[in-house]
Image 1 (cartoon, helix red, strand yellow):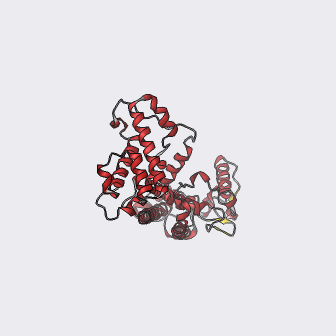
Image 2 (tube, rainbow, N blue to C red; image 1 turned 45 degrees about the vertical axis):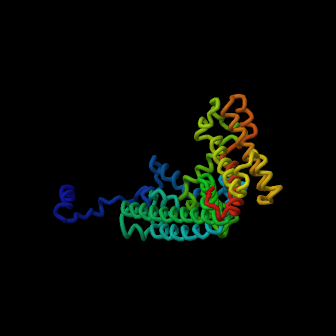
Image 3 (cartoon, rainbow, N blue to C red; image 1 turned 60 degrees about the horizontal axis):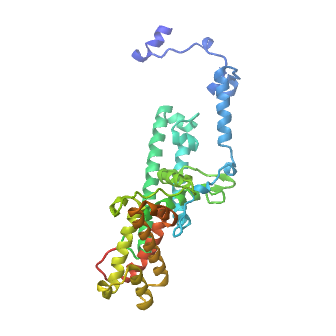
Length: 359
């Protein structure tokens, strides 16, 4: 009989197993009917029991109390907050959850099993349609497609947010650092609407799927990296080289001097009489505010802050003794420069709308 059974694949003749040779009972980890199973005390039986208990605790109803919204991933700046993008994030989350829940129901799996394509047990409907290997492949394809759709929607929302800020601030293009801040705020909004215990993702005390914001995992990891940086740590020192502003290439000091020079070109364009005057930068800024009334007092204060940073950066480039002053009084990060530049940029772009000089 054994020889004939081996040849079944070749000749197609099925060899039935006599009832007398069938096992009367099977170990419970094989998941047969209850009346055909017995409690196994073997190593495989213990492993099965531990895995089953773990899954029951992991996916127990009412786990929303155990889902924590990490405040470190809620990113905001002085001029931007993640809360501005929660409405669009909720709409995208609802669409993502609907597609994911349909995929989970089709194959009879939980969220973690769908995302990993590794299920302890597939649903009966899925088991009748295809074997475990085909089901795992179908899950991988479905999850990959869903993640791709979510990522495209994230990129679309970031582009829309950047364009809205450019219009709001009357600028042609936000700086790269400002665009990065917008991107992190959108990612933070996606995280917030998913993990907020009082949000729309909690229904009848049970938390919905949690994988939605991780389509933008790179942005969330960047937020976590920024939050992990020591707040009291001093900024890196500027490289010193006597009389060489170019030694600040790639540093905050070089950017400060570049942004200040651009600002002064535009301020001079506001009043052609300044082109041939002997006023220094400080006097020119005060002249445009006090005597001409062209710029506001707030814009003047921001322009003077940028001028002060420029002087500190220039001094640090020329003398090692001035580096400590730069570290103490200069901008601590790129975001601090962004806040000043974006505010001045918005005001000057409005005033120079008809000018050929670009910011």
